[in-house]
Image (cartoon, rainbow over all chains, first blue to last red; front, side):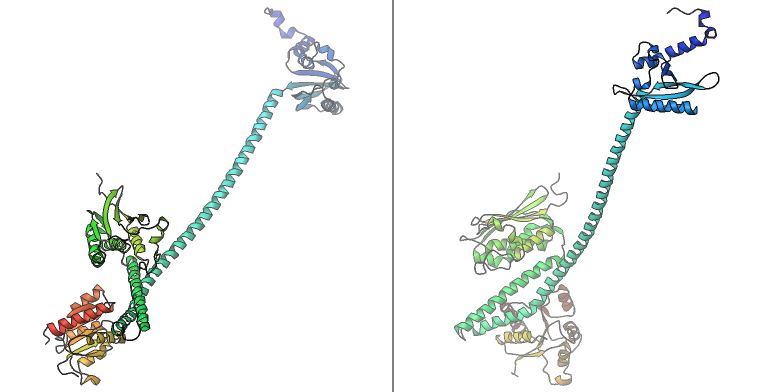
Length: 418
Length: 142
């Protein structure tokens, strides 16, 4: 387009008609004039384009009913009739237009009354700006917002649920902890009571038992063979019962003494403790013809007298539960990780694997009194001693193949560390 | 009372124990006579020939239990050993207690020896035999 001359560019020189034409041809909004029946009188080119008309003049005498859905056309018609009746304009009304083909567009509409020179209303004129893009964006935003709110609501309810669950869990745990603490206290008291009971019972039982045992023994000593065979038998049972009771009380007393006396940990020579045990077992060793071999044993942090008792019970058992051959017993120790592992190995009758746990329980016995007398306390004492020292005790064995008792004593701090 | 018999005072409140000791001495070889006092107060009255015991025979040897009614064996021991007329009589503490505290205190009060009663009859008999062979035949009593 060639540049306009000065006279042509002077807007003051143009007529109103020219201005109106230019306005309607170029303004990118929908501008329209309608008569009192809402028939188009004149429309802007933009609106003609929207209507799909080549010439804006083709819209003359047409109405919204020719372009839009009845619903929208009805609404626009009602608005315009209202303006004509009342003279009240409609400003910036955002409305949805549904086209005959079903399409939806959005416009922001301002409509005012069209008056003649004498001020009478002869129609309406209006301008509608297409805001579909903005409206869609808004709708999208709205959807996002709704979705986001839903997400937040869902998350919030999840969190609330989780929080409530957590609070319930915490409350439940607190209750459980209190119960546990109470149980531990009860257990502690009950254990102490039991220990006291065991000690007092076994101690106070000694006196009357000494009487029973001594006098049945005196009976046996003075009257065996002097009454009759039945009397001898009765006396024999009485003496035997008293002896067993004596052993039981002695074992119970030594078990309860473990906890009553506490643990005095020193650097103890386990070899010396083992030798003390062997000395105490001298008679049994001689009687059974047992051979007890001791490898070099370490210095450990332990209660020496309890360690000696532990060896005595284990070696004593190895002698007691011997097979046809004379007992061969070997005591050894080796370092394994943080523990000294002691082993007492014999060639005795062995133990079936199903009893490996049970033998360490209090009063659990595998043999009849006739086969092997015992109180079922010896290994319980062993386990008590080992566990009080922070170790564990177990057995490896096969019936008829001898047994190997193993127990650990934690290595002294710094020992064996390079 | 047998002339020349060794006179023993047994202070023991349990009749069963007293009888057992008596029976044990019966099996012994040395002729002896055993008098039993069942509480500490009676034992001291007997030794001091007080009241009903004015005619008592002074013992050559005292066997003393520690846990006694009225007057404890520990007090009886202390009183004997602080009494000039009685302190020369050997006192053998014969008790069920093996408490180190009792042993220490007994020797502290000048007990002549301290023996824990064995539970087993055979061992008890051996103990009494030892007392007999040592205190009644080996040593020279005042």
